[in-house]
Amino acid sequence: MPKELWNDAAGGFHPISASDFLPRERLREIQLRRLQATVARVWDHVPLMRQRLSACELGRDAIGRLADIARLPFTVKADLRDTYPFGLFASPMPEVVRLHASSGTTGKPIVVAYTEEDVQVWAEAMTRTFASCGLHRGDIVQNAFGYGLFTGGLGAHYGAEGLGATVIPVSGGNTERQIMLLRDFGATAICCTPSFFVHLAEKAREMGIDLRTLPLRVGVFGAEPWSDGMRERIETENGIEAFDIYGLSEITGPGVAAECSEHDGLHVFEDHFYPEIIDAETGLPLPDGEEGELVLTTLSKRAMPMIRYRTRDITAILPEPCACGRTLRRIRRIARRDDDMFIIRGVNVFPSQVESALLEVEGTLPHYQIVLSRQAGLDQMTVEVEVTPEVFSDKVRALEALRGRIAHAIEHTIGIRVGLRLVGPQSIPRSEGKAKRLIDRRHD
Ligand code: DLL
Image (cartoon, rainbow, N blue to C red):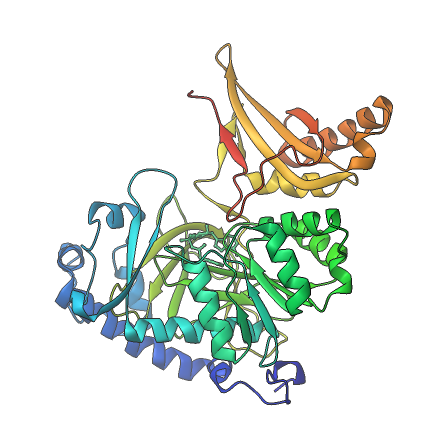
C-alpha cells in the first residue's frame, strides 16, 4: 500500500479504509448480495416500489446478476415529494433514529431517514472520505458545514470522529469567529462549501490574518459545484490542499464519493452506493467514460433505500485504475446539474462555464452572480463580477481593459455576448452554505 495512504499519525493505516482496496471481483460479490437484499427490502416494505417493480414485471428476486440493475425502474425527486414525509420508509418508525431534510429550491422539503445501522454506514463512509483526503488522528478539523437538517455538518462530524481526529463543531456562518477559532485552535483542516471558504479567506485577509501562516493544510469542500480554476485560486492563495467531496441527502448525505491525493476524479464508495451513468433524455445506460446523468442505488441503506435514484448531476465514470491504488471507480468532478442549465438566445449555458471563464482572467475575484432578465420580450444575461480593490480603484481605462478581457473569455466559452457589470469588492452577497449563482428575474 502506498505510503501516503497510511492514515495514522503514527504511520498506521486506518483499518476502515481497507474496503477502498478490495479486489474488484470481491467488491462485485458484495454489491450483488447487497443489491439483492435491497430490492427484497423495498419489495417487502415500500408499497410504491413494489408497485413499480410489478409494473415492470419484476419481483422480489429481480436481481440474478449485477447487470440486472438496468431493468429496475428509476426513482426521482418527485417521488420523495409525492410521498412526503415518510412514504418511502422501509423501516418502522421506532427503528428510525434520525431524520434529515433538504429544502431544495421550491415547495416542500424532502425527508430522509436513518436507522442506527444507516448512521454507522454513513459514519464509515465519511471516515473513509477524510482518510482519502489525507486526514488522520492528530488532525484538528474545523467543521464549518451547517449542523441541522442539512446533512453536511453531522456527516463531516462523524467522519472526523471516526478517524480519531479532533472536531471543532463550529457549524456554518459567523465568519469572524470562525477565523479566530482557526487561528487560536490551530485547525489543520477545514470543511465547508468552497464558496464559504473563499469568503472566509477574504475576511481573514481583511482582518490582517494570512491563512498561509496558520497550521491549516487541508480543505475538504463540497455540496456545490466548483471549478478547477476555483480550486487553483483557493490552494495558491491560502497554502492548502483542497479536496472535493460529493454526496446528496437522498443517498446518505456527504460520503458518497471523495477525491484522493491524485485529485483526478472522486472515488465512489461502491460497496455502499452503486453508480450508473445514463443518457438523461432516453434513460438508457451509457458506457464508462461517457458523460451523462449519475444514477445511484444504495446497497446498505435500511430506513430509506433508493433504487436507481436520478441525481440530475452530470458526470462520467472513469474506469481506469487510479494511481492511489484504490480499486473503487471514480466519477469526474461534478461541474453541473442538468436542471442548472438555462437557455439564453438558444444557447445552453451552465453557471460553471461562466465561473471557469471568469477565473481565467487576472483581476477578478471568485465572487459572481448571473442575472437573467427579460427586456422587451428578449432574454438578457448579465454577469456581475467582483474585481480586486486595486483594479476597482484604478483608472477607467484599466477597468475597461479588464471588462474587455472578461467579455472575451465568457464569449469564448459560451459562444454569445453577455452583459457585464464589474462591481467592487463585497458587492455580491456572501453565502454561508451553498452559493446562489443564478438569479432568474425573467418571470418577475
Ligand atoms: O450537499 C451533501 C453534502 C454535504 C455533500 C457536504 C458534500 C459535502 P444536498 O443538500 O442534498 O446534500 O445536495 C446534494 O449538491 O445532488 C449536487 O448537485 C450538489 N453537490 C454536492 N456535492 C457536490 C460536489 C449535500 N462536490 C446536491 N460538487 C447534489 C458539485 C455537489 N456538486
